[in-house]
Length: 439
Image (tube, rainbow, N blue to C red; front, side, top):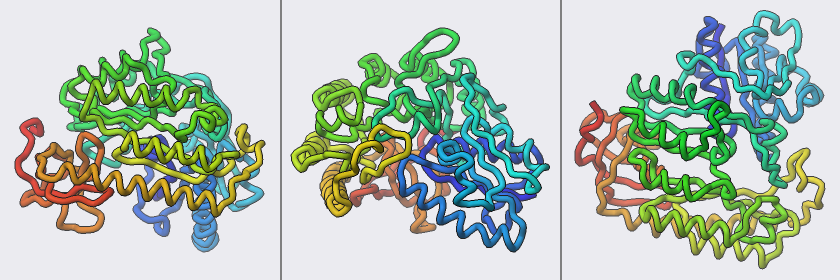
C-alpha cells in the first residue's frame, strides 16, 4: 500500500506527521508524493483558527472523488479530529477513521480492518508514550524537531489547544537526550525543541525545569544550533534568558507571542501578564543579547477590542520592532471562553486592522533587513529556493530566510554568506566560504 499525508498547522503537527510516516513505513507501506497514487490518505489537522478548518473541509471535498473512483482510504488525525470527534461523520460521512493526537500509535493496527468498518480513537492519556526514534521519517536531513511536551494548562480565552491536546505532560530528559544524540550521530546540525508551552517543561523524573534541559542539550556534541517553540511570556523566566545568553548553541532567537499590545485585552484573553510585564522581558533579553531576533503572534479584533486598544498593539510593534510576526483576525473557537462572548468587532474592521498591522510590520522588517546588507552571516542551507532552482535557501541564526548563490552544492551544510540585498521577508547574498564545522 502507498500512503500520502497532508499536514495543516504548526511545527508540532509537522513533527506528528513525521512520526506517523515513520510508523507506516515500518509497517511495510510506501510513501507517495501525491494523493492520486495513494491507497491511504491521512489529513493531519489544525483547529487553532477557523480558516484552518475551512481549508480542511475543502480538501476533503476534493478527495471524495478519489475515494469514489479508486476506493482510497481517507482519514483525519490531529486537533480537528480530537475537537469534533464523531460529529465529523455528520459533515463528511465518507471518512474511514478519526484519530486524536494521543492515539497515533494505533494507526498501523487499524489498517487491515479498513474500509469495512469505521474507526474512532480520541481517548486521552496522561502518560508520555515514546515512539522508537529510528522510526521517525524526517522531512529534513539537517534540521529536526524533538517534542519535549504536549498539551497546555493555560486556557487562554481564545485558544482551543487545551481541548485538542489536553493537559500538559512532559517527556523525560533521558528520552529527549537519546533522540538528540541520535540526530547528532546522523549529521543533523540543528534541533528545535517543541511543545505547546516549553517554558513550563518539568522533567517527570527529576523535576528539572526547561532551563536545565537546555543546558543538558547544549552539551551534546555535533549539534550546532538549538531552538525552541512555543514560549508563553508568563512562564518565560530570567533563568531561561540567562541560559540562552551563556549557551554556545542556543540561538539568539525567540518566538514570544504577545497576542495584543493592550493590557486590558490581555486580561480578557486570560494571558496572565500585562503589556508592561512583557516589555520588561523584552528589555532584559535585549540587554543580555543585543543581537537577539524576536518574533511574535498578534490577534486583531478580539471581542470588545476598541480602536484605542488596537492602537496600543500598533504602538508595541513600533517599539519592539520584531524581526517577524504572525498576525491573524480573531475567530471564535468551540469550547473556549471567548466563544461565549459576542464576536462584536465587524469583519470589515478586523480586516482593516490586520492590514494596518501587516503594513507596519512589513515596513519595520524592510528597515531591519537593510541593516544586514554588507554583513557576512553564518547560514544553514536547507535546500533549493522554491522560486529559483539556481538559488539556494537557508536560515541564519535569527531564523530569517536567506536566499543565496553558490558555485558548489551546499545543501545540508553551514556556509558563510555575504548579504548584498533584501526584501521585507528575506535576505539575499552569495557564498563567501564554508564553515569548518561541517565535516
